[in-house]
Image (cartoon, rainbow, N blue to C red; front, side, top):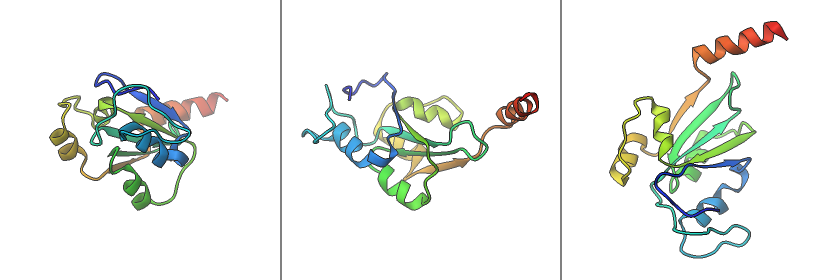
Length: 135
């Protein structure tokens, strides 16, 4: 895994099943068997999005922080594979206003333990409907 840089967004495909190992590898000072980090460790309050069934009608996006994402996944319950992980400050843009500071207070105030959004936007839904008609 690459080391932390504030301007970097890390995307992990099909990583939800190993999220515990992944988070430990990113935030820990010690190496994790099977997953290692090359560079600086990630702050535990860094935003992470778990996006399940992306671009589908039943898409779900779970927004959390590295140190609370496992508890958030447990609380949300049922998994909706396939899932991808988006790790970095860019996750705050999912809230729509595009304004954020890269610090712990901002992350914790904006996210709390976690936030869940269901479904996709109306414009994308319309596009999918049009694609189905043409298929």
